[in-house]
Image: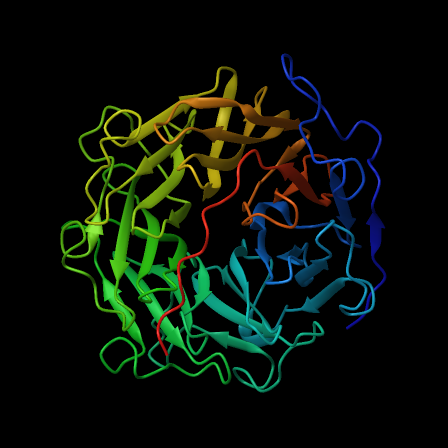
Length: 438
């Protein structure tokens, strides 16, 4: 359904605000207009629902979020940040969702993530109230009527009313033949294997059920799933998430390609890297796994006043060569509340680039931060970008084009606009691991 949208490619007056001490914008001026691209929608973006971004093989960028009170909003951009007008005519597709499969967008919707297959089909996952949904769009941006119930939407529930909550990431398996979705339900982490063609459960996954349940702790702590990644070498799946009782804390889970928890990782396939640490890490948002199997996990800590990074060994133990025994917290003075780091990448020398956002001045201001740390965890001044009047940084894409990252966020002022930031990378990322043998 085509609707009139507003697109702002240039900087809005006053939109770029730098905090005291920052030198220059730190943005890649060859991206968008002066390092950023803005997209506005009729009803505004639902900034509280979040945003995600995915880099295509040809370096184009797809973002997904929600238009306030209306439905799914997806954009596609060229590697330089301009809207790709070959996508739905203007680079923006908005899909009405209210009433579809019982969706009510007045019930605090949350976007889990977005992924694009090799044919260009787009998959997003979102939560509305306590139910998670997978939405599939065609490469042109229309609902794929061959998926789900003929409307492109697949609820993750069953006839017994077994509802899901806290949808996390969505990815394709190493061969592109299975859609993987992480959700939380009560005290269980659920990993779903779904046919990317029909939306049906893939019964070859999860011991014949299409779903793998894992309880990350011995108590009855509620679980929220964060992002997940898939190894292109052996298909192993790594999921990060948050446990909520007796206090919020981060966990990392690892499964083989068939959905079986790996007993060689942590305890029963689960590592809780911050257990016993002095810092209280309250979220697990994103994870990056290097070719040697080491997960780097980001989130927030210390009552949401610090940024948090953990680096683990392939067996789930802390990597003692990184920072303080594998753990790093970065306190930012003046924070009122921290969303924390929501995106992470690891560069060729082992250095870590993380993106996140925080609120300031009793929620009257906000900023996005992208910062680099060395392989040992030391802050690196060559990449430390802070952009004011933005919040909700939802991802950090792998490097796009000639050495830049792309970070999606929202303007802090209403109606919210989507903003893509082009961040210059100081070092190349490691080469991708070899593909699995045929």
